[in-house]
Image 1: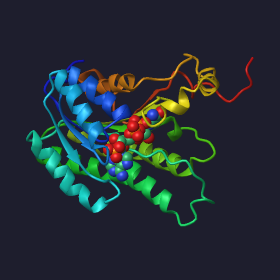
Image 2: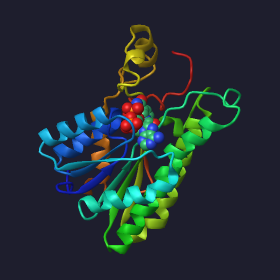
Image 3: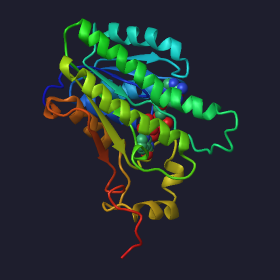
Image 4: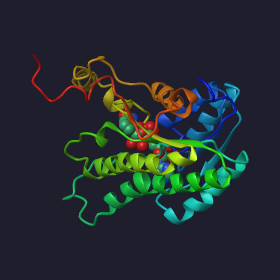
Length: 259
Ligand SMILES: NC(=O)c1ccc[n+]([C@@H]2O[C@H](COP(=O)([O-])OP(=O)(O)OC[C@H]3O[C@@H](n4cnc5c(N)ncnc54)[C@H](OP(=O)(O)O)[C@@H]3O)[C@@H](O)[C@H]2O)c1
């Protein structure tokens, strides 16, 4: 993919799942990577090993994004590792399945909004300011979800965070285009990861999901990596404020009865 070689990219949530897939693809493209994790140290070391085997330079950085006051220090450390960054991938997220009635004290809502929305908001601002100060452009990819477009029961906190993330993607694109900073979103459909594969690969569940997808199968973490690489690369150089849906066609099909 054009223009990615040696680019310095911070990927949040690179210790498993989609973030690890993004890291592998960007490593293959020749990027230098800062791999963020929170609790899964074994996972991030596995990602590190995989990207190093692909020839990438990479370093690891830990932070709990619920501690919003620590984000500025975290970002400064990430910026210094390769003496700057060319791209930021806001991928870390929690998938909260709850309801407002069960979350009576609102703590699940608060944590979801902190990790999925407030952290990307603050990291994006820190990245944009550092790019402006360094008189360089940059690219941000916000990993959203199809829940940013249409959701369902149990997902009010998650959907609020992803719909909010799509909103800041568009507004940041508008505000920072003048500085050569592009901001786009990725909206994955259903992608089995370590956290979910035991549920999603259960045959009855797999059939229930896959028959609703025109392409008839789940997504793969590396496919999310390919889409992210595109959004960071020169191939998407005139693209900003867009949300790229990669979901096997799931959301394109309305909830109509089968014909
Ligand atoms: N998989 C899907 O089907 C799907 C679909 C649409 C969107 N997404 C989005 O894709 C992103 C990655 O999710 P995934 O499915 O790949 O799940 P995952 O494997 O569970 O990855 C989640 C990542 O977020 C990090 N994280 C969680 N809580 C955090 C916190 N408090 N502070 C900092 N980092 C934290 C985790 O770090 P540690 O494990 O190291 O703590 C992990 O690296 C999320 O934003 C999710 O909403 C996923």
